[in-house]
Image (tube, rainbow, N blue to C red; front, side, top):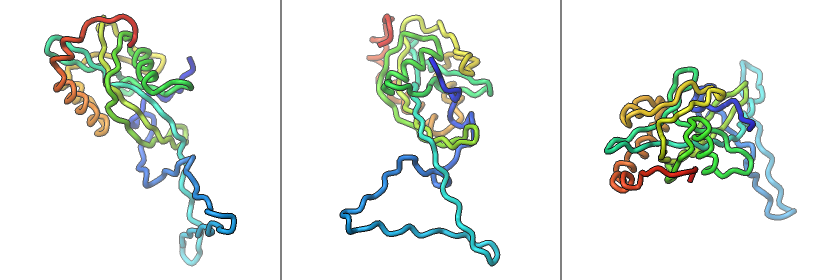
Length: 218
């Protein structure tokens, strides 16, 4: 299965930029004239002055849209919640995720990527937490990434973890929820972690009762 090498986001592959600095969508809708007799006014050109000489202002850089999906994966051990984390070659811990492939829904991508990157195949997809938007550069190209993040429960034999080292992952392991939260380096990802933990805390009794081994990926 062909995969893009950019498995790790949140700034691992390049510098993150603010949208106000660089972004101009590739498919930005253009206003249409209301009639054939009504023409769109010409766009005014911008100029910078350098000394006594006026030069044309540089255009905004276009960004390529890309989409990924993954999950905050948890397991219930008695009264304790643990979170699954993966580590890249730079030693950074994150959540499993990857690019959406042709014909997939974001839910299918999220489950597939978690299974491929961790070796866990008994997964129960819960609710969608939120999505993250950010910019980074890859090989000189500006990328506008949208990552859809779901809450997922691992059931069955959750100790059998196999990190997918072909994608630059060097480790995958379970952490106590508070420890996992401390490993997150970016505020947006930390926000999603806190959302996930708050929902798990609120749903603890029914989740514990329902957490029994299942076969297959639901």
